[in-house]
Length: 255
Image 1 (spheres, one colour):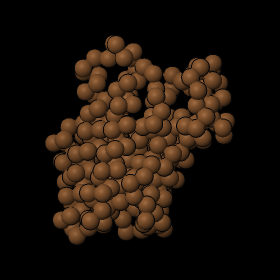
Image 2: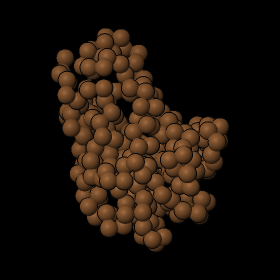
Image 3: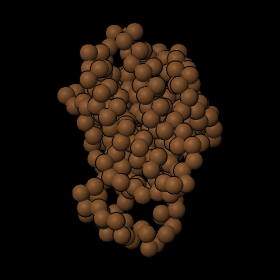
Image 4: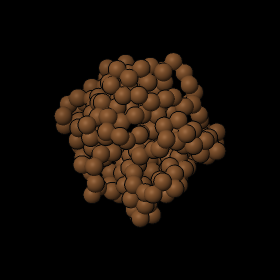
């Protein structure tokens, strides 16, 4: 039980990668706070799976793109669970548009959740860690697109590129508090956000041709990496990105 006695909060854990991470951490002993945009049936299903894994937790709803909500989410989590040891910044959105057609509203929405949410949720978490005496781990779910261009998703790559530098900066500033900060950069993973791709046989075949391991990732692949970075096995790992992409980043070519 690598996380026995620990409490983790996973944002956007009502489905997909977030749910897989929440359940994986629970299976290693962590009590888990399930955070989603609202206390909905999907979030409650994640909590049910956490309990099936032999642990417990709670559900907290809130728009992670609002800094005031971020502070409230952390405060409510601490009140409900007594403390927090691990923060997984998983919540994220993307909006497809040609660069010339991106609206200010869509740009603000993507940067709000993906970057502002990570920034201010981590800030509130770090203040809690400071108050309780130090020690903790932050795992940001980034993307191969913190390095790799993604035509028609300019706001998304802007958020993930910024997340890379934010992670590096936070890892230095928060090290005196004993907080490690790392990114996980998934490649193409079978999640609801990729539903359109999965239903397009030609596009899917082209993508698989760019992946040396010749398969899409599973949410569990990312969850295993998150468990490592959250655990003491990664006690000397901070300020870095772990790519979980089947080799996509180093074999990618536009079709």
